[in-house]
Length: 69
Image (tube, rainbow, N blue to C red):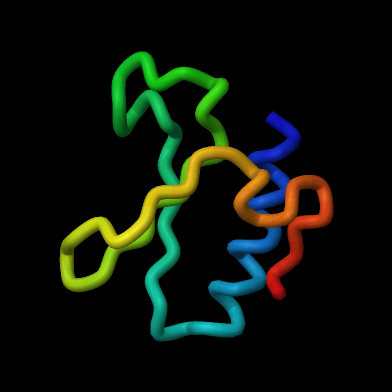
């Protein structure tokens, strides 16, 4: 999915900028069986072991203009 690749590049850049923050990725269906492609990309933000935010879709990050900023 093109949108996932766009967000992945942004997150990889952020991971380089913030080495003390953990960035991980997983194939959606390896994490949640039958997770629908229409929900990709999905970003879960954790702090101290608890989910603090969930972002479904690229529109949260500026759609096709997604940047690390």
